Amino acid sequence: MKVRINLFGALRDADASGYIELEVPEPCTIGELRELLRDHLRTYAPHISVGLVQRSAFASNDEILHNHRLLPEHGQIAILPPVSGG
Amino acid sequence: MSDLYTAVVDIRETPLDPAAALAFVSDPRFGGINMFIGKVREHNLGRIVTGISYDLFVPLALRTFEEICERARKEIDVPMKLYIAHAKGSLRLGEIAVIVAAGTPHRDEAFRASRLAIEAVKHEAPIWKQEHYVDGDSAWSEGCSLCEEHRETERAAAHGRTAHAHGHEH
Image (cartoon, rainbow over the protein chains, first blue to last red):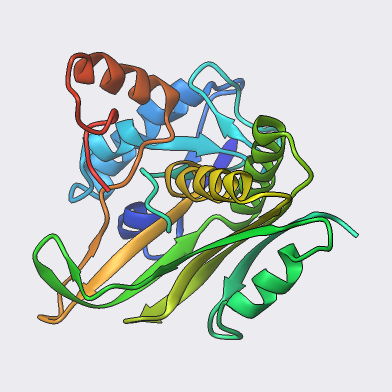
């Protein structure tokens, strides 16, 4: 399936469109998606540090999705780098 | 009317409004009102700041603010009104980035509720700060990881250290 990963904060520098689309196996866990995104960025956005992806969380509109969770069926997800509000 | 107000404010449309926050948390039941206002300051880590751009994942930010309000209500366990609003967009020096206000029967609860809320907003809400400097450079702040697996690793590494428990200060 195709998943659209919406980018925020420092990860916006990975793609000017504000998102990255990846083809992923079905089902796919968040942990697997993290690996696939890391590989993608290594090729297409090498200026993004691998450590930043490790420190980032994935989330739906409602909640943080940890590594063991499955991708939402609608194929949309957000990646959240470390936060710095206030 | 609800006792909780949460908002993400696009500052291209309107600035954050402390008077509105005070009005919201005011109530005949409450003798204690406390408000925290976070503003863009001139210096950070030795660099001169000219402005800050805030990026937010709005649906989850609002959901997080609501969870924080519920947590404050549960932990402090008194009648309470809480207001949390955060700016989105580009702010100049001195402009307001965040307002947290609490109204409670007495001062101690109002202080505790607003402290709990602002700390949680800073550490848990999906908000990112990009600082702009006088030399034209910009940088995203380092921030707090929301990734549970990463936090576990950091907690283990920070064990025995007395500094900020997740490896940086802010």
